[in-house]
Amino acid sequence: MLQIDLWKRILIWAVVVIGLLMATPNGFYERVEARNDAVAALDLGYSGNGLEEQAALWPSWMPSSLVNLGLDLRGGAHLLAEVQVEDVYETRIKSMWPEIRDMLREERATIGTIRLQPSDPDKLVVKISKPEQIDRAASLVRGLARPVISVTAAGQNDIVVSTNGDTFTVQLSEAEKLATDERTVQQSLEIIRRRIDEVGTREPTIQRQGSDRILIQVPGIGSAAELKEIIGTTAQLTFHPVVGRGSNPEANPGPGNFLVPDMENSTDVSDSSNVYYTLESAPVVTGEELVDAQPSFDQNNTPAVSFRFNPTGARKFGQYTAENIGSPFAIVLDDEVVSAPVIQAHIPGGSGIITGRFSVEESTNLAILLRAGALPAGLEFLEERTIGPELGQDSIDAGRIACIVAFAAVLVFMVLSYGLFGIFANVALIINVGLIFGLLSMIGATLTLPGIAGIVLTIGMAVDANVLVFERIREELKTAKGPARAIELGYEKALSAILDANITTMITAVILLVMGSGPVQGFAWTLMIGIATSVFTAIFVTRLMIVTWFERRRPKTIEV
Image (tube, rainbow, N blue to C red):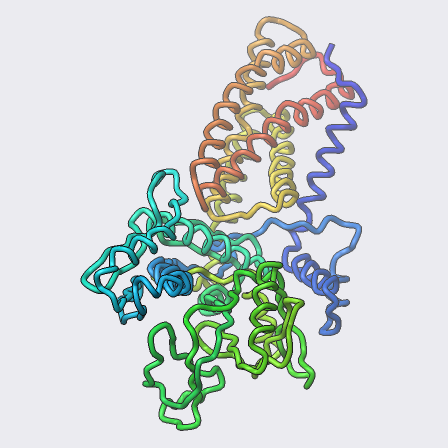
């Protein structure tokens, strides 16, 4: 007998209603989006500027999840950045000098005095006063070598030490450079992702391209310049001992030191009031040991940034301040001295405050950059584009036209081919599209132009299952079976073909999702969701409508 249990009917219609409710906010996109942004701002403690009125634009009891629009639909910024991995070599080598210097000073009676010589940025050249002991000095430095942390470089060391007369040279090994490159790009990728997430942008695309490039696409952001301000700053925070202070930008800082301008210097280099600090190259503490940074105000109620170190950084910071009371130390941010206070007392807590001529917005952005972490190397932007909302609107309009044309063509075809049963299939097709958007909204997926193509393809594929069922019912009617038995057998015998066709397509979509990236994944997501909803509507929704109609009319004969 052709029948469906009551609980199954209730469950099927409940799924349909919930799916359509989840899809409803997308029909009022701008209103719901404004409401969601207002609610998020109110939750963060902001008020005024009409936030309460915007929060009331959509009923709180209604679903408010939206399908996120991708870069090609919403507009936004596109950047292709190249990580300057060579910058890390210089930092690594410079950080080794204090350890080498302290170790060789203990051997002064054997190797004589040591002096750091001018050299390339990625090398350390050290001269000793007893040339006959150069091999001894080089051997001691080789003892500082560590194994390279890499699967492909097992058993190799991170530094290479070579001698020449009364000098020896220290530089990174090729294996260590390759391992450093990999770590630097991965760290840059993660830090860029954290910085963009801190700003609260929707569904950015951040992925690696090649060995040292990163693709960044952020929908809804104003311009590429705005995006560069968020991620383009290295935000490298370090604390250095101050050797001296002057006004000559060409002054020789001496070996092991470097010259840094004060952040408050005027843009006129010839201004004699400009201040330049000579600092020791090796930092006392670095921003990598920061665990928190928050915008705040100093004792004069001017914007500042408070910070806190991890236990290691706090210990080093506390030890240095205890041993250097009365001496100045410099807080350096991206090669500029933010401030150079004199240490008044021991600071054991590992926390402090950065003051300067900040606005509230600048202190907030600086806190975000420091909290997200410092980029290990600079970025060179090879490609930048700003995609305006009007271009995104063109894509939406083109996608809408494609969907309407496909939708109308399928509706007309089904009615002409299958009459009343075609109308049932068309109602199920409308529900199917609603369920697709409901599921996309529920999982927070991003809809791109290829994603719209996936929906258009799904519309064409959605009636395949119904066509298989209806054709099978036709065949069963030719065998002189009654209408009820023909409908029941039509669904039973078409089920294997429906599942086979959709499972193979689902496997293809999964492969696209796993192996593809960006737009390909958007296409795969909508295709997978469309397959699931089309099978549900064909096997359950259409059948339920046909059974309900048949129970009420009880026709002696039917035409499909």
